[in-house]
Image (cartoon, rainbow, N blue to C red):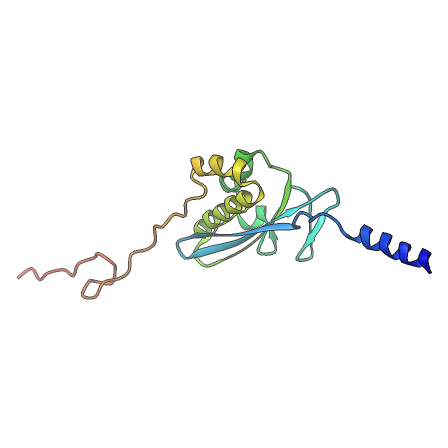
Length: 164
C-alpha cells in the first residue's frame, strides 16, 4: 500500500509543469473602415494547418488565401513584410489574418497595424520602441469626411449658384 502512495505522489509531481508559451499572439489592427484580426502562431519545426492550408514558418494567410494572392505585387509585399523586417523576425512566425471592411489599401494598412501590435505582445520591451519609431503602432485616424446637409452630394461640394 505504501508503494502505491509513493507512486501516486511521483505521478502528481510530474504533472506539474511550468506555464507554457501561448500557441499564438492575437491583435487587431484598424484603418478607415477596415479592420484586421492578426494571429502570430509560434511554429517550431513542423508546418501548421490554418483553415485547411498548410503554412510554413514565415508564411502568411489572409482570409483563407496566401498573402501573395490577396495582396498581389512587390509593392504590397514590401509593405506587409516591413514589421517583420524591422524586428528581425522574418521566418519566426506563421501568420493568419482575417480582414473585413474598407478597400484593399485600407485592409493592408490594418493588417500591418495588427501585425505590429501582435509583435509587441511577443516582446514588448524589445519590439515596441522599434515599431513605434517606424510609425507602425499608430492607428491612422484619417477617414472619409461625412456628407453635410445642403451641399451638392459630396462633403464639401457647394451647390452651383445661378448665373443670372
